[in-house]
Amino acid sequence: MSQASPGLNWPWLASVLVLWALAGCSTTRVIDSEVRAFANTEAPAALTAGARYRFERLPSQQDAAGQGTLEQMAQVALAAVGLTPQVGDGPALLVQLELRAQALQRSPFDDPWSPWGGPWGLAGRDYVVTGNGRVVPLWSPRFPSPPWYQRELVLVIRDTQGQRVLYETRARHDGPWRDDERIVPAMLQAALNGFPAGSGQPRQVDVSVPR
Figure 1 (cartoon, rainbow, N blue to C red):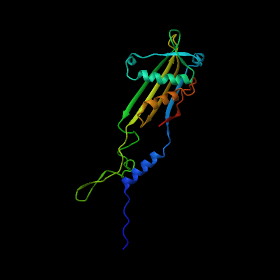
Figure 2 (figure 1 turned 135 degrees about the vertical axis):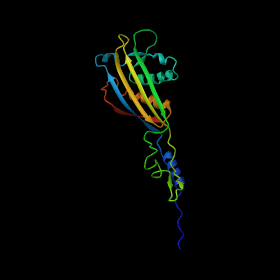
Figure 3 (figure 1 turned 90 degrees about the horizontal axis):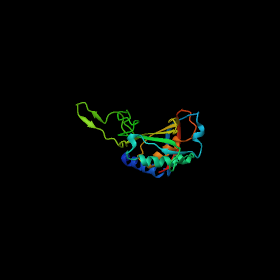
């Protein structure tokens, strides 16, 4: 009688595959943002390269933690499109920033009641009931779902006379990454992609950042 071959050690195999995938990953990752930009076509000259600006905070943002860091990140992105921060007094565009972020316990795409049980999961429930009513749990090598982060960035540019809105842009990004120091600058860059034009149509803008 031939000896039965040992069964596969699925937990070990899954761990090896995950490590192999991580080892082979690129040194960069892509931050994809959904962007919608709106431009006031009546005043395009105000947004030309070299125009000066200063940040304007809402009352709720005066002492908000992280607002200063957000403005520093935006300053880099605004410089890339030719705008210059105002030093001292004088006329300047007003730039208003807002970042809305929410952390979810799990990805909205990770359905715990999926018939497949999620990645590497078993179909159906995590237990079976035998004929005599005994409940037998089924082991599943499914990995716990990581948190999921939703971010929306809003940037509005106004003129100082009449508070007329000259430009408005929004960028939205969802994903498992929590490192704002990389993601938010990428969202700002995406939000200003094509500046000062803005059709109002949603589009995806991809920005590569270091891992």
